Structures are given as structure tokens and as C-alpha cells.
Image (cartoon, rainbow, N blue to C red):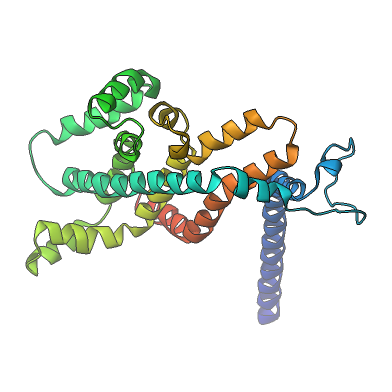
Amino acid sequence: MTETTQSRSVSSYLTEDAVRNALLHVFLYGLAFLMSVPYLYTLSRSFQPNELLRDPQPYWIPPLVGEPITLEHYQYLLNNTLVVEWTINTFIIAGGATILIVVIDSMIAFSLTRLDWPGQGVIMGIILASFMVPYYMNIVPLYQIVSDLGLINSYWGVIMPAAASPLGVFLLYQFFRDIPVEYEEAARLDGFTTFQVYTRIILPLAKPILSALALFMFVYNWNAFLWPLLVLSNETAYTLPIGLVNLYQGNIDTPGLHMAVAILGSLPLFIIYLIFQGQIVRAVQMQGATG
């Protein structure tokens, strides 16, 4: 009788757990679908001819009459604009800024958490205090410095100020501080130098948070608009956000082109997120476990 009761309770528990998981998955997938509705609509409309786009009745799925699907909007972008050059410029600027941020900020965070030198608290206080200074207050002096260095209308004029963000130092500082010191002590006993501890112990353990930081910084610099607009004056040097805004201004009565522009502008970020999403999840899990 006892075994029967226990088996029934276990079966009931498994059933309740399965129902709970099923409901949770239904809710999450439903929420994901709702979030994807605007993107699916934009994607559908970007392949529709102008006749359908000007129709008062919007079509999620083009009717199977006439020419329901067209590539004219994408062909126009590729053949009559500098969208390819703008995309390459954006990759170079966002990628270069991301690499500098990850390398420099990881070194700063390592020195603040693993080395002993005077003034560490002051430096960390300055980094934290910099969050309270609005970005727009630095625009004029920053532009003057970049201009004096002769970096106007160049990649470095956009990349170097972007690499001075304190956010990366703050995130890595929190993560490096939670790495057990026993790892470093064992490495020191094996004869590791400080640089070897940094490159062969700390950085491999911090891959998830470094990937998350790199993705966040890449997206931020990819979408940056104001500072590249001030520095880059040549149309061939524009980044994708600046170039696409110019396309909007010159093509007011072409909704299909606007839809294609939105798809091309977000597609690289979507692909990059798919590649690094596992690293982001692991970074959140590790930070939650160590914090």
C-alpha cells in the first residue's frame, strides 16, 4: 500500500511538473512570436511591389495574382546606393572599437582586482563617477581633441573615443573579483608570470562575460549615430545608420525601400546574436552563481 501511494505521488508530481513546463514553454514561445511580429511584417512588406504597398489594405501574405513578390527594393539598394560600403565601414568601426574595449578594459579590470598598487580605489571611484557625466557634455571637447589630432573623417576618429567607455571595466571588475584566488595562487606556484596569469587563467575563465561584453559593445557601436555623424563628413565613409537615414530623406514615397533598409540594417546584428547567444546565457549563469 505504501509503495502504491508513493508511486502515485511521484506520478502526480511528474505530471504537474510536465504541465507546468508545457505552460511555461507555451507562454515563452507565444511571447517570442509576439515580439517577432513587427519583424515578420517588415520582411514580408520588403518583398512586395509598390502597387501592393500603396494599397489601403495591408498584406501580410501577398496575394497570388500579378507579381506578388519582387526583389526591386533590394536591387535598388545594392545597385544605386553605397549600402555595401556603409556596411563595411560599420563592421570596421564597430569591430575595431569592440576589440579595443575588450582588450583595454580587461587589462584595467585585471589590474584593479589582481594586482596591488596604490590608488586603486581612487581609479575605480573615477571610473564609477564617469557614469554620472552625460555623454553629450563631452561632445564639444572630444570633437576638438579629435580635430587637433587630424582624425576627422577617419575610422580612428570614431573608434578611439568609443573605446573609452567605462562600462566594460565595471562589468569585468565584478566578474574578475569573483574568480577564486586559489587559481592564481596555483598558477604562481607553477611559475606563471603576471601576464601569463592574465592570458592563461583569467581570460579563459572569463570567456562568457567577454563574449557578452563584446556583443553589447558591437551592437552599441553598430547603432551609434551622433558621434559618427559629427566625425564622418564624406558620404563614402558613412556608417550604415547614417547612410540609411539619408536614404529615408531622399526616398519618402518608397515604403518598400524603407522596409528593405530596415531588414538590411538589422540582419547582421541578428546573425551575430545567434552566434553568441550561448555565451551570453553562460555569462548570466556564471555571474548569478558567483554573485
